[in-house]
Length: 113
Length: 120
Image (cartoon, rainbow over all chains, first blue to last red; front, top):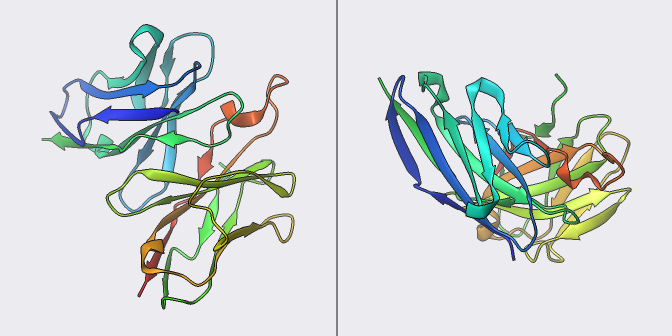
């Protein structure tokens, strides 16, 4: 069965610092991988996705993530945090023949001024 | 940019009552989904819908739940005889259809802002 683990329910970084949000998955076959962001009182917005091809994918708002099959990871990064990045970030996976998204527990990103 | 809309944003219902949550998916999308998020817990898949029938459902989606696409635009989730534990945020999502000859599960799902359901 597939599962998604996000390390750290809360991550706090200073404005301008590197953001690193960790996501590891377990799957018997290579999955499709997604990062979503949820701002307070809003829905889930797609940040980026990996399906096939280049393992480093770029998303909106300066975020990127790298699929590392050997490490079964899909960590999300941003070189320089901005106050507007404060939100909850969710990693999710789906399989070829499977419609549903399997979700991580989410990581709240806190930006310190 | 087209978006998924959900109504109402907040629904308060007495335990045992029926509730219908409404969603308008993005107009050219073919796959529709419901998820829920109980406060403090993970987002959980409920059901996916394609070509006017359920394509997949989770263990949560028992006989208490049903989905319907009553017309060309709405996608509804009905919960019969609500229980306290049904209190959660319910998200609707939709995605495009076939891509490169494969099933659409690699197409990103676009989410609405959710309906917060509170059962008293």
